[in-house]
Length: 169
Image 1 (cartoon, rainbow, N blue to C red):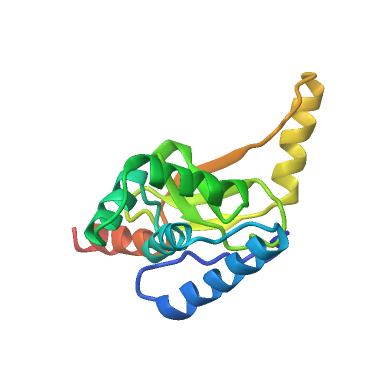
Image 2 (cartoon, rainbow, N blue to C red; image 1 turned 120 degrees about the horizontal axis):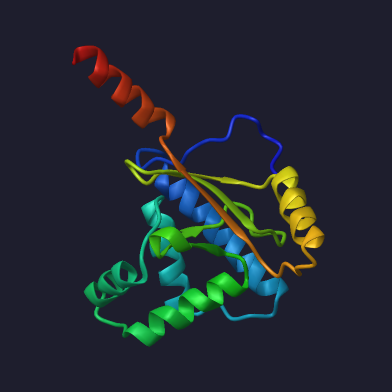
């Protein structure tokens, strides 16, 4: 569970190589623990999702794979389904896109703050949000299987840019 009150948005200008290397290491461990093969295509799709640090659609993944000289839509969707099934990526339904999971070492539902301007995001893992959903569902005699919470707004950088633009009017 994420208890950090100062969540950080992942922007394109941070250390990609270190971030991707850590994500890849985590993915390999998850696959190993689950006795699953982290094939070359699964690895490449995973890497492409992580390289973006913003939600990426399946067709954008497909285009990048085709630049590598391989891939068809079913291949991409199978790889994304595999990654989703192991909790290595999350699907952002409102954007019909995928993001890398920052803590795949344990099962959890996705909760995201997504900037509507630059598409940067922060992944939450709030037990309070999960408890509220489960309690409301229980009160309605509804059985929750999975949930993803997507909160659209402006990230700190875009808020500053907007504020500066308003000042300079």
